[in-house]
Length: 391
Ligand SMILES: Cc1ncc(COP(=O)(O)O)c(C=O)c1O
Image (cartoon, rainbow, N blue to C red; front, side):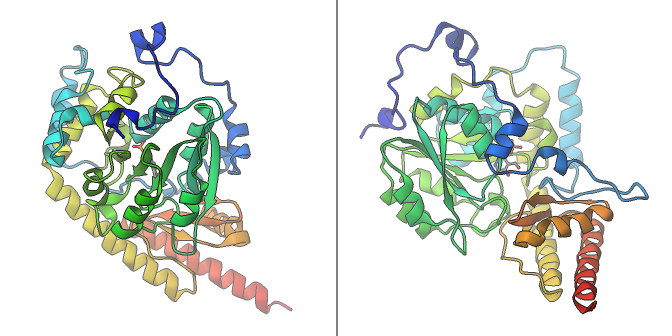
């Protein structure tokens, strides 16, 4: 197999004219109504996850896996300096950031594409690999962006239920067939938090067809025990694509910067679908400054991990089932009790992410916000106990 064969389920000749000029595919994505797509995907409508407030107006955002720390002073200074040049067009291909990432990961910069958040790049990857009748395989529950983006790109989703302790890799491998054009592996997994090991991933990649691209979505890898896992595997698997983001550990969710690292032929196909200039110079400067401030940011990651373990221990002591997490959030597999638990949180102004009849995901925030959450969880436990005792 040559590297140019990877993910070439559809013969792609010359790109249509509009695509060549703008980087956008000429065929419009099917018109979809987001609420319908979410329902088709088995997800609660987004409206139910809007910001809730307690009666006294307090609100705690623990539903979006954001970093509770604002950017460090050096990053804010870089943002201000770049903003002073806002009358200039940006470095459209993000050459400076791509070069810096390439240097750090020891790959050539033509193996990296930077875009407006990893979600935009996952979308571009799906658009680059789709064809009529194509399927995309991923575990479920997993990142709720996957079914939406798969629908937009015209893929049929094949969802493989998670095993008790994470991805069911033998079942994922068995779900890959001749229609499969892409596999998405969220590691660590959102919303359940567990991370696959080096051995698990190698066994899976060894069993998957080498011509089928596999995306390893590492949005939360900095919070995991083995943050270098995906990049390490790239050397052995040319069909592997690693997605990373500056939104989580680097705390730049609002500035929209993510990147993919992969084989250069796949990267060049994705680049054609990424709008030039979609990452502006303010965002690029912030990302570069964040890499320079990495020691400070990784120290904050360590504090979040310590806080995560404190919150998990407190929840376990309250009698909740909470699987170990290698992310900045915890998963409570509450099943049919999820909505009631989320309602208790909402009454206290705490925003969590509810997966109807499956569970609730809570982001690790600042210690005082986590304490408000723990108080609500304890209150919920008391209320349940009181109801059980009521004759
Ligand atoms: C697993 C996963 N992948 C990708 C994303 C998208 O991140 P962003 O577009 O901010 O880089 C998220 C966001 O929450 C996520 O949880």
